[in-house]
Image (cartoon, rainbow, N blue to C red):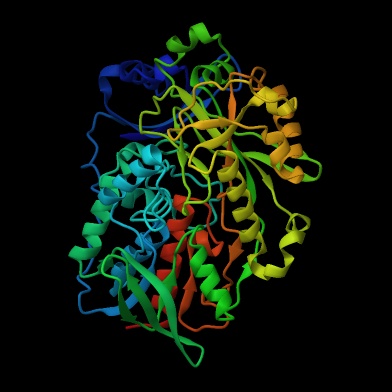
Length: 529
């Protein structure tokens, strides 16, 4: 007989299968020997008090064996001769749109300006070690998109977007550990995600789809307000390519500024939208563990025998705007995510084990229209210009290299120059800079008050053992490409499907993947084979 059981246990009990079996037996009034199999369905940590608990949902089998474990494999059809659909961008929105199109018997043609995941590594090394930014291959551009080499977090705050389970099971089908189906905050890790992305690519190609790397869209072919294809430049050969289709999914990500510029120049409607900017803050992971797990730093190693590297989520209203943590990376690394040589952009990532000695998070402030008044003449691109100005400021302040401007956290809040800086995970290096004087007042003042409030919520957080590194400016797209709520097509251009984070309809890997599926299904609904 199969039972589902919800338990609240200690971290030590949760880590021991025999102990879990004994607890389950007591709860079900059964003998331990009668329990033939236990499967963890869901697991989350409740660390609100010193007495930390683990919430576990179990599937318990008594005197019977479970059926064979699901393989999470999808029987995709061969679409080599299917109706073509162009997808611009191979991030999660683009890749999951391609898989869904194949399910729907369409042939995806994926166009990616960057390189495949293996080739990207050389360009990432060049940013970190030599301060060389390849505008087409970096942490933002290339196979898998920005998420491939910046963490692989697989959770979304919204459960209304679509079928999250299908997204996770698709990752498992392509090589992810099935524990992502269990954890409350699933995470693959930057060290493991590239191989999974390769497997998704293999599925697309083996089933008749196409993927073209080093291929940058330079124009749209539009006739009578309908999309007919795209013109591209092959970056390696510097030759012009033409791809023809009457449906295009535009899934270019939040940093494809050239696409926003192209749409704007062609008078294709785009809109400015709210986004956020700020800094990365980095603490010793042991400090965050001690604060979140309510123990001294000396006790951290014992706690970490049974608990993961601690994370946090912080938010506060300051002078009428939200100041909040973004993309918190326990046991992580701050990464240089510029897409042009004359800018500095930071983000963060963690390996699967989250075992680096630092914890970092974006701490950002919501922008408002009043911030964009100096850029008003740029219309829908005003927010983009504001981003660019802040990133150029960081590049100049850091010495016109990928070295980032930095300041000790308490010094920043106290308006003091940092005469020295603590060790940091940011590989290109940091330069001590008075960020409290360089950040726009709308951001800097709110960050200062926000950090003070965070220090009240987490005693010890506001510390000079922590460092802020600037700037965190790519939290989301500053532009929305509008689409009809029913058809998902652009209101002006038939057959153009704005999609994912770059179009303003997603905020991470899972939500972008879901939006890719939605666009693929919309195409199937309006262009049946």
